[in-house]
Image (cartoon, rainbow over all chains, first blue to last red; front, side, top):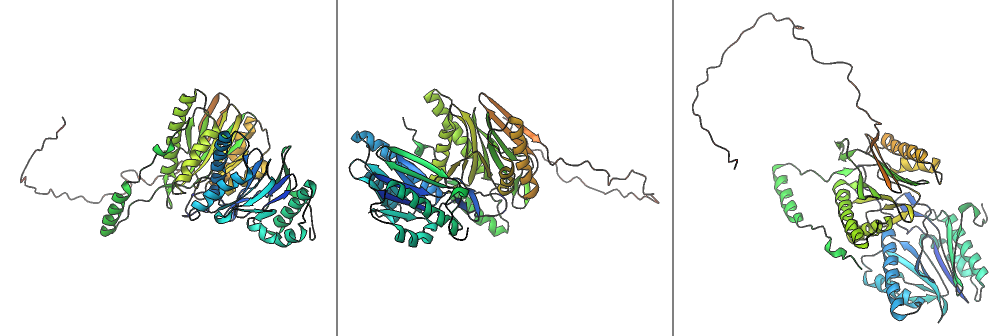
Length: 216
Length: 273
Protein backbone atom coordinates (compact mmCIF):
# COMPACT_ATOMS: atom_id res chain seq x y z
CA UNK A 1 0.00 0.00 0.00
CA UNK A 2 2.28 2.83 1.14
CA UNK A 3 5.77 3.41 2.41
CA UNK A 4 4.96 5.91 5.10
CA UNK A 5 6.49 6.34 8.52
CA UNK A 6 8.94 3.97 10.04
CA UNK A 7 8.13 0.58 8.56
CA UNK A 8 10.25 -0.66 5.67
CA UNK A 9 8.39 -3.08 3.38
CA UNK A 10 4.78 -2.00 3.16
CA UNK A 11 2.32 -4.60 1.88
CA UNK A 12 1.18 -4.07 -1.70
CA UNK A 13 -2.44 -4.14 -2.77
CA UNK A 14 -3.57 -7.51 -4.03
CA UNK A 15 -6.83 -8.99 -5.18
CA UNK A 16 -5.58 -12.45 -4.24
CA UNK A 17 -8.08 -12.24 -1.42
CA UNK A 18 -10.93 -12.52 -3.84
CA UNK A 19 -13.74 -14.62 -5.16
CA UNK A 20 -14.30 -14.67 -8.92
CA UNK A 21 -16.62 -16.92 -10.90
CA UNK A 22 -17.73 -17.28 -14.49
CA UNK A 23 -20.32 -19.62 -16.02
CA UNK A 24 -21.44 -20.14 -19.60
CA UNK A 25 -25.01 -20.83 -20.71
CA UNK A 26 -26.57 -21.47 -24.12
CA UNK A 27 -26.58 -17.90 -25.40
CA UNK A 28 -23.94 -16.19 -23.29
CA UNK A 29 -22.04 -16.02 -19.98
CA UNK A 30 -22.44 -14.65 -16.48
CA UNK A 31 -19.25 -13.46 -14.76
CA UNK A 32 -19.11 -12.26 -11.16
CA UNK A 33 -16.76 -11.10 -8.42
CA UNK A 34 -16.61 -9.67 -4.91
CA UNK A 35 -15.13 -6.19 -4.37
CA UNK A 36 -12.37 -6.34 -1.78
CA UNK A 37 -8.77 -5.21 -2.38
CA UNK A 38 -6.51 -5.81 0.59
CA UNK A 39 -2.93 -4.75 1.39
CA UNK A 40 -1.78 -6.86 4.30
CA UNK A 41 -4.42 -6.58 7.00
CA UNK A 42 -5.94 -3.40 5.65
CA UNK A 43 -8.71 -3.14 3.07
CA UNK A 44 -7.56 -0.60 0.54
CA UNK A 45 -10.66 -0.52 -1.68
CA UNK A 46 -13.94 -2.06 -0.59
CA UNK A 47 -15.86 -1.41 -3.80
CA UNK A 48 -13.48 -2.42 -6.58
CA UNK A 49 -15.07 -3.82 -9.71
CA UNK A 50 -12.82 -6.74 -10.60
CA UNK A 51 -14.71 -7.42 -13.84
CA UNK A 52 -12.65 -5.61 -16.43
CA UNK A 53 -13.90 -5.20 -20.01
CA UNK A 54 -11.54 -6.49 -22.68
CA UNK A 55 -14.02 -5.72 -25.43
CA UNK A 56 -17.74 -4.98 -25.79
CA UNK A 57 -18.78 -8.60 -25.26
CA UNK A 58 -15.65 -10.00 -23.58
CA UNK A 59 -14.86 -9.47 -19.90
CA UNK A 60 -12.16 -10.79 -17.61
CA UNK A 61 -12.18 -11.29 -13.84
CA UNK A 62 -9.04 -10.22 -11.97
CA UNK A 63 -7.31 -12.04 -9.12
CA UNK A 64 -3.79 -12.03 -7.67
CA UNK A 65 -1.58 -8.96 -7.46
CA UNK A 66 -3.70 -5.87 -8.19
CA UNK A 67 -1.01 -4.11 -10.23
CA UNK A 68 -0.19 -7.19 -12.34
CA UNK A 69 -3.84 -8.04 -12.99
CA UNK A 70 -4.87 -4.47 -13.89
CA UNK A 71 -1.88 -4.05 -16.19
CA UNK A 72 -2.52 -7.36 -17.95
CA UNK A 73 -6.18 -6.44 -18.51
CA UNK A 74 -5.23 -3.03 -19.93
CA UNK A 75 -2.59 -4.45 -22.25
CA UNK A 76 -4.97 -7.12 -23.60
CA UNK A 77 -7.73 -4.50 -24.00
CA UNK A 78 -5.34 -2.49 -26.20
CA UNK A 79 -4.19 -5.54 -28.17
CA UNK A 80 -7.79 -6.66 -28.77
CA UNK A 81 -8.74 -3.18 -30.02
CA UNK A 82 -5.93 -3.31 -32.57
CA UNK A 83 -6.78 -6.90 -33.53
CA UNK A 84 -10.49 -6.19 -34.01
CA UNK A 85 -9.70 -3.21 -36.25
CA UNK A 86 -7.32 -5.35 -38.28
CA UNK A 87 -9.83 -8.17 -38.86
CA UNK A 88 -12.71 -5.73 -39.23
CA UNK A 89 -15.12 -7.48 -36.88
CA UNK A 90 -15.67 -8.26 -33.21
CA UNK A 91 -12.92 -10.47 -31.75
CA UNK A 92 -13.48 -14.04 -30.63
CA UNK A 93 -13.42 -14.88 -26.92
CA UNK A 94 -10.75 -17.44 -27.72
CA UNK A 95 -8.55 -14.69 -29.18
CA UNK A 96 -8.87 -12.62 -26.02
CA UNK A 97 -8.11 -15.64 -23.86
CA UNK A 98 -5.09 -16.48 -26.03
CA UNK A 99 -3.71 -12.96 -25.63
CA UNK A 100 -4.09 -13.21 -21.85
CA UNK A 101 -2.53 -16.66 -21.88
CA UNK A 102 0.46 -15.44 -23.88
CA UNK A 103 1.27 -12.77 -21.31
CA UNK A 104 0.63 -15.16 -18.40
CA UNK A 105 2.93 -17.78 -19.86
CA UNK A 106 5.74 -15.55 -21.09
CA UNK A 107 6.02 -13.68 -17.80
CA UNK A 108 4.95 -16.46 -15.49
CA UNK A 109 7.98 -15.99 -13.20
CA UNK A 110 7.49 -12.26 -12.89
CA UNK A 111 3.71 -11.90 -12.74
CA UNK A 112 1.38 -13.09 -10.04
CA UNK A 113 -2.13 -12.75 -11.41
CA UNK A 114 -4.86 -15.02 -12.72
CA UNK A 115 -7.50 -13.77 -15.14
CA UNK A 116 -10.65 -15.71 -16.00
CA UNK A 117 -11.82 -14.66 -19.50
CA UNK A 118 -15.50 -14.96 -20.41
CA UNK A 119 -17.67 -13.58 -23.18
CA UNK A 120 -19.92 -14.16 -26.16
CA UNK A 121 -19.08 -14.24 -29.84
CA UNK A 122 -21.00 -15.20 -32.97
CA UNK A 123 -19.03 -18.32 -33.73
CA UNK A 124 -19.09 -20.28 -30.47
CA UNK A 125 -21.65 -18.47 -28.26
CA UNK A 126 -20.90 -18.12 -24.56
CA UNK A 127 -17.44 -19.32 -23.47
CA UNK A 128 -15.38 -19.35 -20.28
CA UNK A 129 -11.59 -19.77 -20.38
CA UNK A 130 -9.09 -20.19 -17.54
CA UNK A 131 -5.53 -18.92 -18.03
CA UNK A 132 -3.92 -19.92 -14.73
CA UNK A 133 -0.11 -20.19 -14.93
CA UNK A 134 -0.20 -19.81 -18.69
CA UNK A 135 -2.48 -22.65 -19.70
CA UNK A 136 -5.54 -22.11 -21.89
CA UNK A 137 -8.54 -24.27 -21.14
CA UNK A 138 -12.21 -23.84 -21.95
CA UNK A 139 -14.59 -24.86 -19.16
CA UNK A 140 -18.36 -24.79 -18.60
CA UNK A 141 -17.70 -22.69 -15.50
CA UNK A 142 -14.65 -21.48 -13.54
CA UNK A 143 -13.95 -20.13 -10.07
CA UNK A 144 -10.83 -18.40 -8.76
CA UNK A 145 -9.30 -16.39 -5.93
CA UNK A 146 -8.84 -17.32 -2.28
CA UNK A 147 -12.58 -17.42 -1.65
CA UNK A 148 -13.08 -20.05 -4.32
CA UNK A 149 -11.69 -22.77 -2.03
CA UNK A 150 -14.82 -22.45 0.10
CA UNK A 151 -17.27 -23.01 -2.71
CA UNK A 152 -15.79 -25.89 -4.74
CA UNK A 153 -18.26 -28.26 -3.08
CA UNK A 154 -21.17 -25.93 -3.74
CA UNK A 155 -20.41 -25.35 -7.42
CA UNK A 156 -19.68 -29.02 -8.10
CA UNK A 157 -22.97 -30.06 -6.49
CA UNK A 158 -25.16 -27.28 -7.89
CA UNK A 159 -23.97 -27.06 -11.50
CA UNK A 160 -26.22 -28.72 -14.05
CA UNK A 161 -25.98 -28.85 -17.82
CA UNK A 162 -28.37 -26.61 -19.73
CA UNK A 163 -29.06 -23.91 -17.12
CA UNK A 164 -30.89 -20.80 -18.31
CA UNK A 165 -29.62 -17.24 -18.03
CA UNK A 166 -31.63 -16.65 -14.86
CA UNK A 167 -30.38 -19.91 -13.30
CA UNK A 168 -26.81 -18.88 -14.03
CA UNK A 169 -27.26 -15.44 -12.48
CA UNK A 170 -28.70 -17.03 -9.34
CA UNK A 171 -25.85 -19.58 -9.31
CA UNK A 172 -23.22 -16.83 -9.49
CA UNK A 173 -24.84 -14.65 -6.81
CA UNK A 174 -25.32 -17.58 -4.44
CA UNK A 175 -21.74 -18.75 -4.93
CA UNK A 176 -20.38 -15.25 -4.31
CA UNK A 177 -22.55 -14.79 -1.21
CA UNK A 178 -21.40 -18.09 0.28
CA UNK A 179 -17.73 -17.40 -0.43
CA UNK A 180 -17.88 -13.83 0.86
CA UNK A 181 -19.49 -15.08 4.03
CA UNK A 182 -16.86 -17.69 4.82
CA UNK A 183 -13.71 -16.16 3.38
CA UNK A 184 -12.38 -13.41 5.60
CA UNK A 185 -10.59 -11.82 2.71
CA UNK A 186 -13.54 -11.52 0.33
CA UNK A 187 -16.32 -9.09 0.94
CA UNK A 188 -17.93 -5.79 0.09
CA UNK A 189 -20.46 -5.87 -2.71
CA UNK A 190 -21.04 -8.40 -5.47
CA UNK A 191 -20.67 -7.37 -9.09
CA UNK A 192 -21.90 -9.50 -11.92
CA UNK A 193 -22.08 -9.02 -15.67
CA UNK A 194 -24.36 -10.92 -18.05
CA UNK A 195 -23.16 -11.04 -21.65
CA UNK A 196 -25.28 -12.36 -24.52
CA UNK A 197 -25.96 -11.55 -28.14
CA UNK A 198 -28.19 -8.62 -27.18
CA UNK A 199 -25.63 -6.83 -25.08
CA UNK A 200 -23.83 -6.50 -21.78
CA UNK A 201 -25.68 -6.00 -18.52
CA UNK A 202 -23.68 -4.90 -15.44
CA UNK A 203 -25.26 -5.29 -12.03
CA UNK A 204 -24.14 -4.64 -8.47
CA UNK A 205 -25.68 -6.18 -5.35
CA UNK A 206 -24.96 -4.42 -2.07
CA UNK A 207 -23.64 -6.47 0.84
CA UNK A 208 -26.84 -6.39 2.84
CA UNK A 209 -28.98 -7.42 -0.15
CA UNK A 210 -27.07 -10.64 -0.86
CA UNK A 211 -28.91 -13.93 -0.34
CA UNK A 212 -28.56 -15.29 3.20
CA UNK A 213 -28.01 -18.87 4.23
CA UNK A 214 -27.81 -20.86 7.45
CA UNK A 215 -26.26 -18.96 10.38
CA UNK A 216 -27.18 -15.47 9.17
CA UNK B 1 -0.16 8.90 -31.97
CA UNK B 2 1.88 7.11 -29.32
CA UNK B 3 4.27 8.65 -26.79
CA UNK B 4 7.31 6.42 -26.55
CA UNK B 5 7.68 6.07 -22.80
CA UNK B 6 10.85 3.97 -23.15
CA UNK B 7 12.77 7.22 -23.72
CA UNK B 8 11.63 8.78 -20.43
CA UNK B 9 13.91 6.78 -18.20
CA UNK B 10 15.48 7.28 -14.78
CA UNK B 11 19.06 6.00 -15.01
CA UNK B 12 20.56 4.05 -12.17
CA UNK B 13 24.25 4.60 -13.16
CA UNK B 14 25.08 6.21 -9.81
CA UNK B 15 24.27 2.91 -8.14
CA UNK B 16 27.85 1.60 -8.50
CA UNK B 17 29.41 4.84 -7.32
CA UNK B 18 27.07 4.90 -4.34
CA UNK B 19 27.91 1.31 -3.47
CA UNK B 20 31.64 2.13 -3.49
CA UNK B 21 31.06 5.27 -1.37
CA UNK B 22 29.00 3.23 1.06
CA UNK B 23 31.87 0.77 1.45
CA UNK B 24 34.47 3.50 1.95
CA UNK B 25 32.33 5.32 4.49
CA UNK B 26 31.67 2.10 6.39
CA UNK B 27 35.44 1.62 6.78
CA UNK B 28 35.62 4.88 8.74
CA UNK B 29 32.74 3.67 10.90
CA UNK B 30 29.98 6.00 9.65
CA UNK B 31 26.92 5.44 7.46
CA UNK B 32 25.48 7.45 4.61
CA UNK B 33 22.12 9.16 5.20
CA UNK B 34 19.16 7.03 4.09
CA UNK B 35 16.48 7.99 1.59
CA UNK B 36 14.09 10.41 3.22
CA UNK B 37 10.55 8.99 3.52
CA UNK B 38 7.55 11.19 4.00
CA UNK B 39 5.69 9.39 6.79
CA UNK B 40 2.52 10.97 5.73
CA UNK B 41 -1.18 11.47 5.68
CA UNK B 42 -2.55 12.40 2.26
CA UNK B 43 -6.14 12.23 1.13
CA UNK B 44 -8.61 13.47 -1.43
CA UNK B 45 -12.36 13.81 -1.81
CA UNK B 46 -14.68 14.47 -4.75
CA UNK B 47 -17.39 17.02 -3.99
CA UNK B 48 -20.12 18.75 -5.99
CA UNK B 49 -17.97 21.07 -8.09
CA UNK B 50 -14.54 19.41 -8.05
CA UNK B 51 -11.95 17.74 -5.82
CA UNK B 52 -10.22 18.69 -2.58
CA UNK B 53 -6.74 17.28 -1.96
CA UNK B 54 -5.11 17.44 1.47
CA UNK B 55 -1.71 16.62 2.97
CA UNK B 56 0.27 17.08 6.17
CA UNK B 57 3.72 18.71 6.00
CA UNK B 58 6.14 16.48 7.93
CA UNK B 59 9.09 14.74 6.28
CA UNK B 60 10.93 12.18 8.42
CA UNK B 61 14.36 10.60 8.20
CA UNK B 62 14.11 7.58 10.47
CA UNK B 63 12.85 8.85 13.81
CA UNK B 64 13.88 12.47 13.21
CA UNK B 65 11.76 15.11 11.52
CA UNK B 66 13.83 16.26 8.56
CA UNK B 67 11.47 18.96 7.30
CA UNK B 68 8.72 20.50 9.38
CA UNK B 69 7.05 22.19 6.46
CA UNK B 70 7.54 20.29 3.24
CA UNK B 71 5.11 20.55 0.37
CA UNK B 72 3.49 17.24 -0.58
CA UNK B 73 0.92 18.48 -3.09
CA UNK B 74 2.66 18.57 -6.46
CA UNK B 75 1.65 20.32 -9.66
CA UNK B 76 0.93 18.04 -12.62
CA UNK B 77 -0.99 20.37 -14.91
CA UNK B 78 -3.14 23.50 -14.46
CA UNK B 79 -6.17 21.32 -13.69
CA UNK B 80 -4.49 18.27 -12.10
CA UNK B 81 -2.57 18.05 -8.82
CA UNK B 82 -1.00 15.05 -7.07
CA UNK B 83 -0.24 14.31 -3.40
CA UNK B 84 2.72 12.02 -2.76
CA UNK B 85 3.57 9.60 0.05
CA UNK B 86 6.53 7.26 0.30
CA UNK B 87 10.10 8.07 -0.64
CA UNK B 88 10.24 11.88 -0.95
CA UNK B 89 12.66 11.94 -3.90
CA UNK B 90 10.63 9.37 -5.82
CA UNK B 91 7.33 11.25 -5.48
CA UNK B 92 9.00 14.55 -6.36
CA UNK B 93 10.79 13.28 -9.47
CA UNK B 94 7.97 11.06 -10.70
CA UNK B 95 5.41 13.84 -10.54
CA UNK B 96 7.80 16.27 -12.25
CA UNK B 97 8.50 13.78 -15.03
CA UNK B 98 4.84 13.07 -15.72
CA UNK B 99 4.01 16.78 -15.44
CA UNK B 100 6.55 17.52 -18.14
CA UNK B 101 5.36 14.71 -20.42
CA UNK B 102 1.75 15.73 -19.88
CA UNK B 103 2.51 19.31 -20.92
CA UNK B 104 4.05 18.07 -24.17
CA UNK B 105 1.09 15.75 -24.72
CA UNK B 106 -1.33 18.63 -24.08
CA UNK B 107 0.48 20.84 -26.59
CA UNK B 108 0.34 18.02 -29.10
CA UNK B 109 -3.40 17.34 -28.65
CA UNK B 110 -4.18 21.05 -28.21
CA UNK B 111 -6.49 20.24 -25.28
CA UNK B 112 -6.52 20.56 -21.52
CA UNK B 113 -5.06 17.29 -20.15
CA UNK B 114 -7.33 14.67 -18.60
CA UNK B 115 -6.85 13.16 -15.18
CA UNK B 116 -7.09 9.66 -16.65
CA UNK B 117 -4.12 10.41 -18.93
CA UNK B 118 -1.95 11.43 -15.98
CA UNK B 119 -3.09 8.31 -14.14
CA UNK B 120 -2.17 6.02 -17.06
CA UNK B 121 1.25 7.62 -17.46
CA UNK B 122 2.00 7.31 -13.74
CA UNK B 123 0.79 3.73 -13.38
CA UNK B 124 2.62 2.51 -16.48
CA UNK B 125 5.88 4.02 -15.26
CA UNK B 126 5.51 2.67 -11.72
CA UNK B 127 4.65 -0.80 -13.05
CA UNK B 128 7.71 -0.75 -15.30
CA UNK B 129 9.89 -0.25 -12.20
CA UNK B 130 8.10 -3.08 -10.37
CA UNK B 131 7.63 -1.18 -7.11
CA UNK B 132 11.23 -0.04 -6.73
CA UNK B 133 10.08 3.55 -7.12
CA UNK B 134 8.42 4.05 -3.75
CA UNK B 135 5.78 6.57 -4.77
CA UNK B 136 2.22 6.24 -3.44
CA UNK B 137 0.10 8.98 -4.96
CA UNK B 138 -3.32 10.57 -4.67
CA UNK B 139 -4.09 12.13 -8.04
CA UNK B 140 -7.01 14.51 -8.46
CA UNK B 141 -8.28 17.04 -10.93
CA UNK B 142 -11.13 18.38 -13.03
CA UNK B 143 -11.28 17.88 -16.79
CA UNK B 144 -13.84 17.90 -19.59
CA UNK B 145 -15.50 14.80 -18.07
CA UNK B 146 -15.86 16.27 -14.58
CA UNK B 147 -13.92 15.78 -11.34
CA UNK B 148 -11.84 12.61 -10.90
CA UNK B 149 -9.79 11.15 -8.03
CA UNK B 150 -7.36 8.24 -8.23
CA UNK B 151 -5.05 6.49 -5.79
CA UNK B 152 -1.90 5.02 -7.32
CA UNK B 153 0.27 2.46 -5.52
CA UNK B 154 4.04 1.91 -5.93
CA UNK B 155 3.56 -1.33 -7.88
CA UNK B 156 1.29 0.33 -10.40
CA UNK B 157 -2.26 -0.56 -9.35
CA UNK B 158 -4.86 2.21 -9.26
CA UNK B 159 -8.28 2.73 -7.74
CA UNK B 160 -10.79 5.29 -8.91
CA UNK B 161 -12.92 6.31 -5.92
CA UNK B 162 -14.89 9.24 -4.49
CA UNK B 163 -12.57 9.45 -1.46
CA UNK B 164 -9.07 8.05 -0.90
CA UNK B 165 -6.34 8.19 1.73
CA UNK B 166 -2.67 7.12 1.58
CA UNK B 167 0.39 7.14 3.78
CA UNK B 168 1.14 5.92 7.29
CA UNK B 169 -1.76 7.98 8.63
CA UNK B 170 -4.20 6.68 6.03
CA UNK B 171 -6.14 4.49 8.45
CA UNK B 172 -6.82 7.41 10.79
CA UNK B 173 -7.89 9.63 7.89
CA UNK B 174 -10.06 6.90 6.34
CA UNK B 175 -11.89 6.49 9.64
CA UNK B 176 -12.95 10.16 9.41
CA UNK B 177 -14.00 9.78 5.76
CA UNK B 178 -16.01 6.61 6.32
CA UNK B 179 -17.90 8.36 9.10
CA UNK B 180 -18.68 11.70 7.47
CA UNK B 181 -18.41 11.42 3.67
CA UNK B 182 -21.54 12.26 1.69
CA UNK B 183 -21.81 12.44 -2.10
CA UNK B 184 -22.15 15.95 -3.65
CA UNK B 185 -20.94 17.96 -0.65
CA UNK B 186 -20.56 21.71 -0.72
CA UNK B 187 -17.05 23.20 -0.93
CA UNK B 188 -16.86 24.30 2.73
CA UNK B 189 -18.03 20.90 3.97
CA UNK B 190 -15.53 19.12 1.74
CA UNK B 191 -12.66 21.33 2.93
CA UNK B 192 -13.66 20.79 6.55
CA UNK B 193 -13.85 17.02 6.01
CA UNK B 194 -10.40 16.85 4.40
CA UNK B 195 -8.94 19.11 7.08
CA UNK B 196 -10.34 16.85 9.80
CA UNK B 197 -9.10 13.71 8.08
CA UNK B 198 -5.54 15.06 7.82
CA UNK B 199 -5.76 16.28 11.43
CA UNK B 200 -6.70 12.75 12.50
CA UNK B 201 -3.56 11.51 10.76
CA UNK B 202 -1.40 14.25 12.26
CA UNK B 203 -2.49 13.65 15.84
CA UNK B 204 -2.72 9.85 15.76
CA UNK B 205 0.23 8.89 13.56
CA UNK B 206 3.84 9.52 14.55
CA UNK B 207 4.95 9.80 10.93
CA UNK B 208 2.63 12.73 10.16
CA UNK B 209 2.60 16.16 11.70
CA UNK B 210 2.91 19.93 11.46
CA UNK B 211 0.49 21.80 9.24
CA UNK B 212 -2.36 20.93 6.87
CA UNK B 213 -2.12 21.91 3.20
CA UNK B 214 -5.23 21.88 1.02
CA UNK B 215 -5.69 22.14 -2.72
CA UNK B 216 -9.20 22.82 -4.04
CA UNK B 217 -9.58 22.15 -7.78
CA UNK B 218 -12.69 23.22 -9.66
CA UNK B 219 -13.44 23.82 -13.30
CA UNK B 220 -11.20 26.72 -14.27
CA UNK B 221 -9.85 27.51 -10.79
CA UNK B 222 -7.32 26.06 -8.36
CA UNK B 223 -6.97 27.20 -4.73
CA UNK B 224 -3.62 26.09 -3.37
CA UNK B 225 -3.98 26.74 0.36
CA UNK B 226 -0.59 26.35 1.97
CA UNK B 227 -0.91 26.33 4.91
CA UNK B 228 -4.61 25.95 5.32
CA UNK B 229 -4.40 25.15 8.99
CA UNK B 230 -1.40 25.47 11.28
CA UNK B 231 -2.50 22.64 13.52
CA UNK B 232 0.84 22.54 15.30
CA UNK B 233 2.03 26.07 15.89
CA UNK B 234 5.25 26.30 17.88
CA UNK B 235 4.47 27.68 21.33
CA UNK B 236 5.91 30.90 22.75
CA UNK B 237 8.47 30.37 25.53
CA UNK B 238 7.17 31.78 28.78
CA UNK B 239 10.55 31.82 30.51
CA UNK B 240 14.23 32.41 29.66
CA UNK B 241 17.40 30.73 30.90
CA UNK B 242 19.52 33.88 30.41
CA UNK B 243 20.29 35.88 33.54
CA UNK B 244 20.98 39.60 33.63
CA UNK B 245 24.67 40.42 34.02
CA UNK B 246 25.21 41.30 37.66
CA UNK B 247 22.94 38.48 38.95
CA UNK B 248 26.00 36.62 40.21
CA UNK B 249 28.21 38.79 42.40
CA UNK B 250 31.94 38.95 41.34
CA UNK B 251 34.36 38.72 44.32
CA UNK B 252 37.70 39.17 42.51
CA UNK B 253 39.09 39.28 38.94
CA UNK B 254 42.53 38.13 37.59
CA UNK B 255 43.62 38.83 33.95
CA UNK B 256 46.71 36.99 32.50
CA UNK B 257 47.68 38.10 28.94
CA UNK B 258 49.09 35.26 26.73
CA UNK B 259 52.60 35.96 25.29
CA UNK B 260 52.24 35.03 21.58
CA UNK B 261 55.02 35.36 19.00
CA UNK B 262 54.19 35.92 15.30
CA UNK B 263 56.15 33.13 13.48
CA UNK B 264 55.06 33.41 9.84
CA UNK B 265 52.56 35.35 7.79
CA UNK B 266 51.53 34.31 4.27
CA UNK B 267 48.80 35.51 1.97
CA UNK B 268 47.21 33.29 -0.69
CA UNK B 269 45.04 35.08 -3.22
CA UNK B 270 41.74 33.45 -4.25
CA UNK B 271 41.11 33.04 -7.96
CA UNK B 272 37.92 35.01 -8.43
CA UNK B 273 38.16 35.30 -12.20
